[in-house]
Length: 127
Image 1: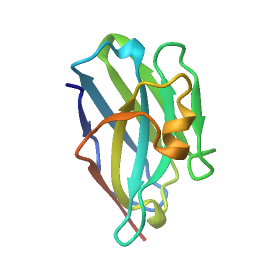
Image 2 (image 1 turned 60 degrees about the vertical axis):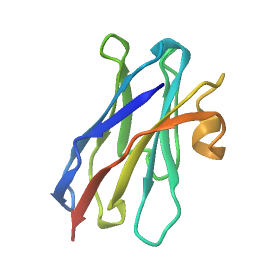
Image 3 (image 1 turned 120 degrees about the vertical axis):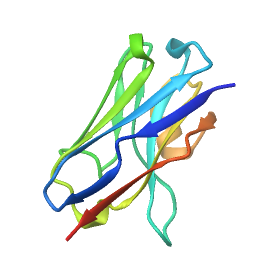
Image 4 (image 1 turned 180 degrees about the horizontal axis):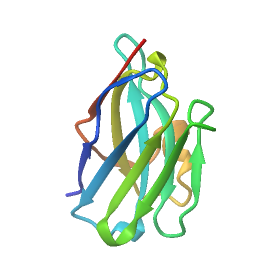
């Protein structure tokens, strides 16, 4: 019943910025966490960061720290991923996922409790 729609991907040069959005519907947002994941061709899908909308707590993986910022707007049921200083290795399809867990890090680290995935948005960083 949960629907997630990512947007904001595109082509950007090295060092540029993009903001991704994940719009959620079909559930009470306060009871879910949202995680961002990415998958490059030939690679596994890896967690990037997550946020708990109920209390605003966040968790970031090493790839996200210092460059990416996750935030949420409960009124809009939307989560954002602000990406700065982009590198070619950031090129991937970015997905958001919704989960119902106590602490959001478990969905990014382990994929635990994910109820729904979006279809993804492609980010391409040119060298």
